[in-house]
Length: 199
Image (tube, rainbow, N blue to C red):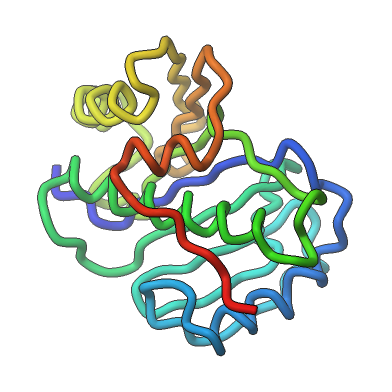
């Protein structure tokens, strides 16, 4: 399956009461300091939308957000354009981008000690309903690739994978690993160095 528009979300286990607008200057600073590999363009404020996309950091390659969908705060990233490599490599690319954004937020000076993300729960989803409708056929096609990806990410720890059953919704799976794991550890498993924000 030639799936390109892939999204992931890691959830906040601390920091759910921080006012969403506090993330706006942080994202603007990321744009100014070019702290991510993406070409960062602008920030959009959807804090007025209940259980919505929250605060969006718009990039050329994809969008980052402090996402509130499902009344669950987290960092989400979804890719908008073609990614290099086969599907397993695309999953690792999107996961790395999402984890790096989580890590950067945890290390921001005004956020330190106030927000923390869990590494053992995540969503993986498709933003292309034409190529990947939310069907049993899509799940059967994607599950072997997802399993191979998750086994490496969670270093062999047990996990559960539950698909959103709504056929009208996008293809989306909730993943929960049995063992607690930090964002930093997941990034190390993906073979990436820790990035730090600029002062």
